[in-house]
Each structure stands twice: as C-alpha cells, then as structure tokens.
Amino acid sequence: MFNPSEVIPEFTADTHGRKAEKVDYALCADGRVNILVECKPSSVDLDLKHAGQLFRYFQVTNARVAILTNGVVYQFYSDTEQPNKMDEKPFFIFSLDTIKRSDPATLERFTRAQFDIGAIIAEAGRLKLESQVRIELDREFAQPSEEFVKLIARRVTSNQLTAAVREQFSGLITVSIAQLVRDRVNDRLTSALHVANPEPAVLDEGQSDDMSDAGDGVITTEDEIAGFRIIQAIAARHVDPKRIVIRDSKSYCAILLDDNNRKALARLHFNSPTTRYVGVFEGKTETRHAIQEMTELYKLEPRITARLAELSGG
Image (cartoon, rainbow, N blue to C red; front, side, top):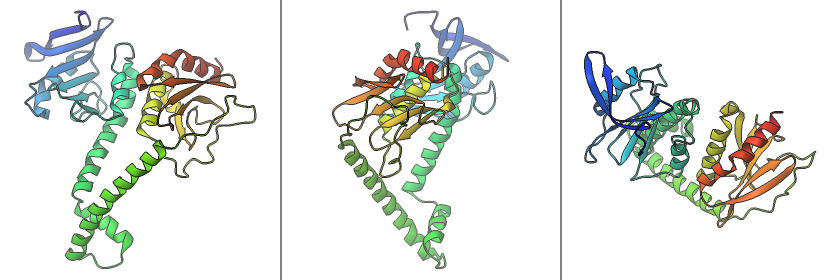
C-alpha cells in the first residue's frame, strides 16, 4: 500500500459531464487500474445510492472490480450482467462482523500475488447467484412466503389449503427448518470427530480414487470446499477452472481433473480433528503435507502445477 503506483488515493477519473471526479482509491498493477474502492463512514449502512460514483468511474476506467466499503462491510461489484457497466448487486460481501469460513479463500483471489481478473470474473457470476440464493433462503427460513408454504403443503397433504392450513404449515416449516439446521450441525460435528482411516500412499495402475462410499453419510465441510476453491484457483492459471472437480468420500476429499478418478490432482485429508493433510501426486505416489491454515495451500502451487502438467500430457 506504500507503492503510489499500485495504490492511488483520491484517484481522478473524468466522467461525461463531470470533470475531475475522484474515487477514494484505485488499486493498480502493471500500470493498469484493476480495482476501484469507494469508502464511507463506518456509521453508514451501505446502500446502492452510495455506489453512484463507482458506477460512473467503472465506465471510464479499465477496472473490472469495484469495492464499496464502510470499513466493516466490503461489497464487491463487477460487470457480470453487461460489459463495462457495473452490476447493481454485489457478487461478494465480506463483513468483519460475521466472517464466514469460506471468506479467506475468496479474499485470496484479490491479493496482489494471486490476482487473476479472468478467474475472478468467471467466479463472480457464480458467487453473485449464490449470494442471492442465500438471501432468499434466509428470508424463507425466517418467514416462509405464501408460495413456499403452498409448495410444501401440496407435497405432504391433499387437504384443501385453507387459511388455517397455511398458517399451520407456516409454523411447521419454521420449526422443521430450525431442527434440520441443528441436525446438520450435529452431523458435521460427528464427522469432524471421525478420524480417517490410513490411505495408501501409492496409486496403483488399476486403482482409482475410491468414491464408492460417496453420498453414504458423507458431508463436505466448508474447509474442504475452501481447499477445493484454492486449488481450483491455482489450476485456473493453466486450464479451464470448470475442469477441476471435487469428489468427497468418507476417507478423504479428492480434487480431480475432468471429473476422472484416474486424474487425481490432490487429496484433502481433513477428517482428523487435530491434523490436516493435503496429498499431492507425482506419478503414482502421493505425498502428504501437513497444513495449519488454508492459505498454506498456495505453498503447494509448484507441486499442483507440475501434477496438472503431468495429467494434461504437458
């Protein structure tokens, strides 16, 4: 942040009909503006009206990412709907008050060393839809809409949907969802306490990743998803990120190329409550590396890149 060629405060961006307008910060690399940042007081609840300047700046710079923040909440915007026009809804929201376990992996994409605008834009659309789905589900879980109540009621009863029946199902849905969430949390805690059985260190010629138990009580944890996203981000520098697929089992979580069991890119051994390992391959041999933090996965980038080249025939 002390490099004035990379972090430019009070960045001037002339817009149509408005001269010498300034955005609070412009984050640059190689002489190119990559991210625009507009800051508001921490006492302000961010609203779309606060993004007015960013909308204008977005059209007259090379930036593909804009951040609106009050220092506590950070809203990330891009142009997933229309090129060079900033979306009205953020594709990612990060809050210091409610940090999710998946947030660090997403934030890693915006670091100077890992910044890849192509991979970010490709992921932005998915993150935006995921965020909107979470918001709608949260609303339905807190106070089920009439449409949602009708949908569930029609699936479980043939009785006429009178006002009394709808009111009854509304209460049942709220209680059932709360119980379902508690059950899922308990399942995850049980899974976390389960220590994985030892896995073979060599992948034999006729052996594939054993996914026969996948789907049989298997729960993919947020850490496993975060690890997958980091490996996918590393691989995205060399192949289409859609080719990198996650497959979970009771023993380990496999990261595969082309959804092919014989093309294991890495294995996440995260079932132990005390120690986590990441297995990377060279030929048929798997070498496990102990990690404490998810960001340590980036230290394995050379091994993952080499394995990717091996699997791709390069």
